[in-house]
Length: 299
Image (tube, rainbow, N blue to C red):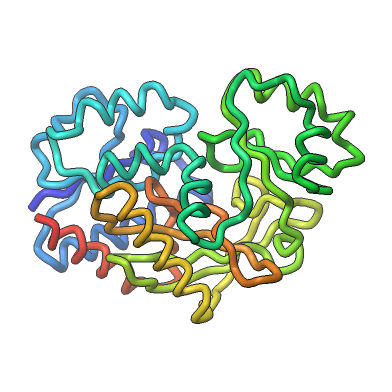
């Protein structure tokens, strides 16, 4: 079998890669090793490369396409072109569903413990940010675009700051759909737990800690990654969330990362990463073998 490891064009042949980019390359190297051990050939390609013949591959495994939300129109047009022309893992229907974070509302409605989320549609500028916070009884919130990643346009705002941040809020909601969520204090105390789920089963986890003075845990904002042994509650929630996502999309989910935060009643889902998650194989290399096996079983 020939497997395409589909990437952001920046990661294909980087010159003098930083530690950040080396993590990306190392993650793909683990997958290349795992596929080779299973008798399959791999090639790293950029989704945006017009010269790639996608029908030449038996499967397209989406990896670190971390520019998709910055080139969303191009990316969705590419999804349209490959849908049905090649076997995509995770499937195109899953990618489309997961790209818009309003899926969090669907999970909550299905009974999955999720960070409370209010979707504010683009152009809904009549109500102020302060009014929206008061209506929910939220003293501190996080606002973020419905389609985004890497902490883009993500802000933590206390009620006392809402008036000063109103211009920011109006600019954002005039431009795109936005999410409004209560700020989770546990992010500062214990960070965010990320569980990797392969073929429906949690394989390993890490804990991501924000840099001092920050609340965003991504590497882009100085966050650090630490080993973590998941609790039974974390495993059960992560696996349940993926089952529900599979039921909702009617599609098979080979890999996922489920980001959780502690809450008074137990862990809550912050995000499901079903498109291009970092899977932290450097913390648990056998998960790369598990993913390769999952892909090959889907022939």
